[in-house]
Figure 1 (cartoon, one colour):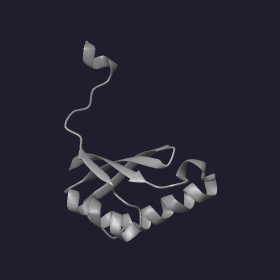
Figure 2 (cartoon, one colour):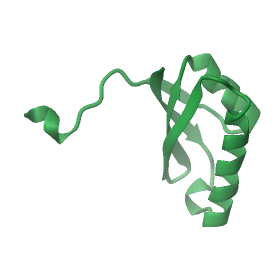
Figure 3 (cartoon, one colour):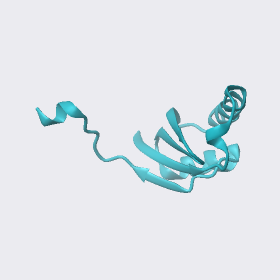
Figure 4 (cartoon, one colour):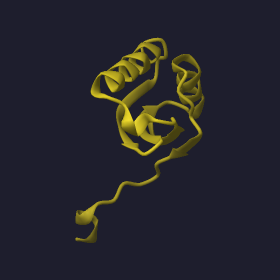
Length: 89
């Protein structure tokens, strides 16, 4: 599967309570259970956006998740390489 970064515009997400984030996560998981070939790794919440890291067989599967969950996929970018401090040697 390929790795993707999904940028979602979600006004107010940065000020959601833990319970609200729990509910949003459950809603996402319900949609994921209906779509083969998609895995949610984790998400970063920043201001009015989330940046979600997914493994998926195709970009179409991510669009299907967005449709079923009700969470927009405003920008989907395939990750081509991962680097970190150890990349420098």
